[in-house]
Image (cartoon, rainbow, N blue to C red; front, side, top):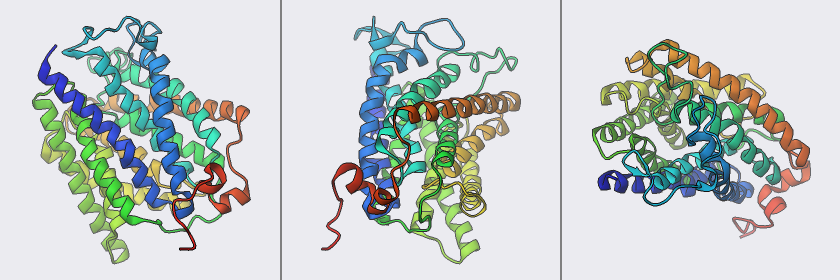
Length: 393
């Protein structure tokens, strides 16, 4: 065991959990209407609890178990059987690797919350997310990070798929799933409503920016130069995307908005995630500059050219950003185009099929959408019996 590596991954684990609680909760909560903010908080906290239990029971073993299979890790690590404080994963305790990866398994289904906000039934959130994490996310994590068939070079010659911290495993899967759930749900009664608390949005985005240092830097699994370069690349891409989003918004609409600039931040962070451990700060800056424009155009396309109501633009920001960043890994010479595009295609197909199956199975257990009256009254009161604000004060 290396004590420096262990200390750094302990910190990184806390940072990645911080991204969901409270970072993502505040970012998403500020974007919805006042009568739905507590439902976002509730969904983030509930998924943090549920994914943790499922990751211990089955998810970790499926993704990182010792089975010599390119498809899944087996069940030998279910409930961390055989793992003690002295058991190592590389230079850190395996139990630390387990909990670090748990924070990824928490935030990935939590990202999807943004697609179905303001109209989803809470029971569906729990059932669908549990099925999806085990059936879609965990196998993909094994394929790319757990020694599976996309990482070993078997399909693409000498090189496997390069995804340093989750452009495919996290952002492509969550983005595509968000699109499919939003399509199944149908649009809200009124799609054109402004964020109720842009201050929450800015605070949440700031927390995500800081937490992303653990997300990408921790993925080196060591306190070394790769981790330092990943953090630097992460910061430069976020900074560049914030500026390019604001500049493009100014060119198109004559003003740059605060919500826009922090959405650009998230786009830059998503786009650099797969490349962060492989590219220079200059390359990361280029990725961010392009992501700020590309993801903004994707948002506008989804909002104005389609009938899919992806409430908080999960696909356009996370899905498009992660896919774009995965391709840029090959552009900057860290992986082959065949491997990167092949990985995107295989995981994309699995995600689409798996998500549809999870939606259908969840709908056998619980309804997917609240009724018209509950949607009108807001999910805070109708689903949870609480209000974030005294509306008459």
